Image (cartoon, rainbow, N blue to C red; front, side, top):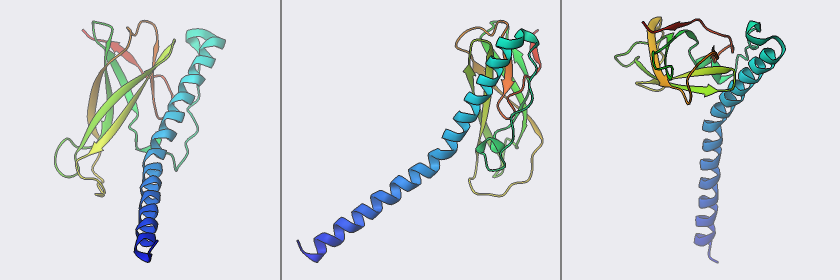
Length: 166
């Protein structure tokens, strides 16, 4: 092989390595969030097994480097009349402008609890925004009716107040 062929092979291998490293870095925070969510649900299920609906929890320990710090904590939830739809309320960023944030929510369900994860999607990534404190909400549909299950927030894994839609 010529030097040109070797150079192409080396540059290609380096490029693939860089792509793999970027992928690993980008998905690491997702993996950490999923581990955190599963730990919160497991803790609640364990406490429920021991004490039933009167189970008391302490918040999950906070890791200052965890991606969970960027996830807003749900303050309260409203269950709609159909029993399948939940609106979660939280404090988040503005709805408009370069510092605006759009939010999506998802429910991670277990036998005795529904943990709501809210994730923000900034209008402009990398921008330093300090404006916060806006009352926001996301609405999501459960895989089965809420029934007597608890609703947990993702940051500390703690139960939140639930009201019924009127």
